[in-house]
Image (cartoon, rainbow, N blue to C red):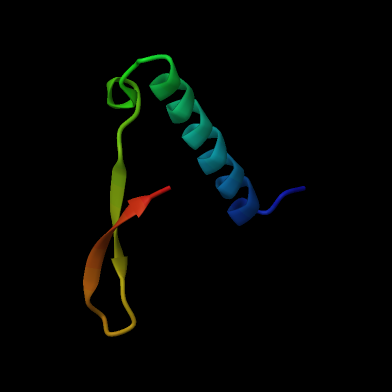
Length: 53
């Protein structure tokens, strides 16, 4: 069974390939995919936004 990190990686690859397919056929990926960001805590306790893949 795949661990979460591994399966999450492959999901990102699949989405990236789907977005590339949209581009190659002249379809705007932004019409079908949106970027998701999340707040992550840094070692100092500060927070910053990070693009979720």
